Each structure stands twice: as structure tokens, then as C-alpha cells.
Image (tube, rainbow, N blue to C red):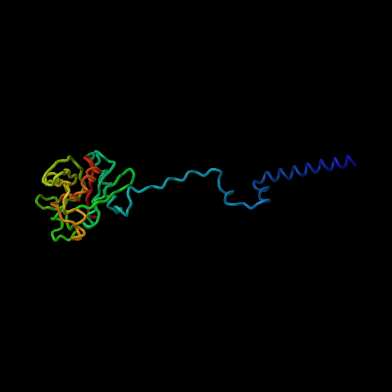
Length: 230
């Protein structure tokens, strides 16, 4: 009896061993008998890193995509004449003067700040609040289109001001025409409450009196301003 029991036991061990070996040869055969497979089982042990989503330089809700594309292309084209490439300003003259359309864009972080800015009287003779035309001509009192690079500061008839140099054929007379950045009472926000629009400059980028320090701090010398109506 003992030998028979021993033989039966040995055969049972061998039989059980073959069953276990077969189960190990089929991944999940043992575990599937005790629980259902879940989505967790189907995932790799280590997920590959997801590619970082491309972040736009600035929201299209702030600067319209086509205008932004043109501004960046202009910065690339005139790059050798622009010392600082970390920030730039984009002036959207499609918008009326009642809207913040002087956009200061941080090209590294994508952050942007928008302020009011006036256009030239020669660009809007009927004073509608919207720019109708550009001009590069002396005596036109109109705003000019294209890329500018900011230059030095000085104190003139408009108080503290900053010179600009036109980089395109459409604004190459900017320095000679004394198109500058300055503050003016007619570019203050309270003009919107009383008139619904800003006053007009002689072609300069005129900003509110309380905004001038911020504009100077964000631009400084050697940065681009791109102005267009797209």
C-alpha cells in the first residue's frame, strides 16, 4: 500500500508540474482564472513620455493669427537690425481706437499686455475712430505701416518720448517725420467715456499719460514694433 501510494503521489506531482508549466507558458492563464483583465493590465509597465503640446506665442484672442504671423516674419526678416528679440509690440490698426490694440508680447513666455493707442489724423480725416489709410509722406500726419525699431529717449514738445526708425519702404521716413512714442491727454481712457474713441496724433504712437512708463519699460531701445491693418 505504501509503494502504491508513493507511486500515485509521484504521478500526481508530475501531473501538477506539467499543468503549472503549461500555465506559465501562456501569460495571464493563471490570473485570468481568478479575475477579469482590466485596462490596467493592457497598459505597458512604463508609459512613454507624452510630447509637450506646442504653446502659441500669444493667444489668438489677443493678437489675430494672421497679424501675428506677419509680425514674426518681419522680425525674422529684419532680425539683424533689431538688437532685442525677447519682446516686441504689435499694433493692430484693424481695430478701432476704442479698443486696446497696442499689444506687448513676451516671445519667451507667451504673455501679452494690451493698451490703447491713437492713430494719425491723416489716417482718419473724418475722425471715425478707425484708421482708413497709411502714409509714409512728410506732412501727411498719417500713421505708417510696417516694422519699426525703437531708438533713444528724449524730451520734446510732447514731453518724454522715444524715437523710432522705420525698417520698411512703407515707413522709412519715420525718423525724419519725427514719428515717436509719447503720451497725450487725448489717448487717456476717459476719452472713451466722453467721445467713444481716442483723439488723433500726427502719426505718432500716442498712449495714455499713465501708460507711458509701462510702454517704455516693456519696449526699451532696440525692440521691434510692427504696425499693420490686416
